[in-house]
Length: 61
Image (cartoon, rainbow, N blue to C red; front, side, top):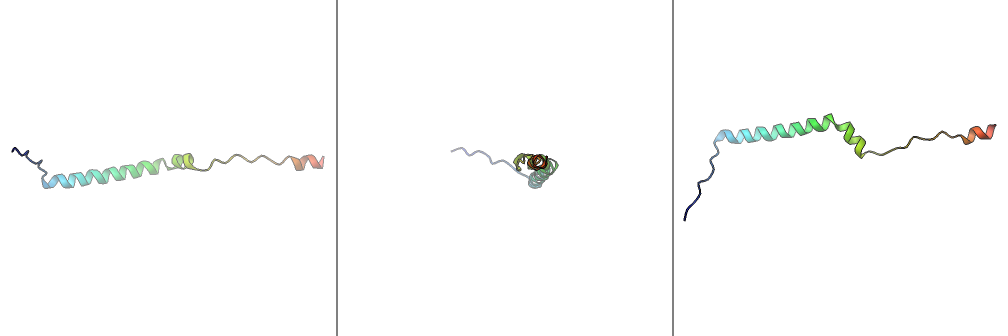
């Protein structure tokens, strides 16, 4: 039976993978913070502008 050799990871590879993971998380955080206003507007309540009450003005005339 033939066994395939296992891939070799030297000690520096682990720290490199951790650095990539931390950089990716920080990058996502910065991107979210930069576009937070747009995200909030997208999922926020859609308020319609209130119409002025013209009935009170008509009653005085």
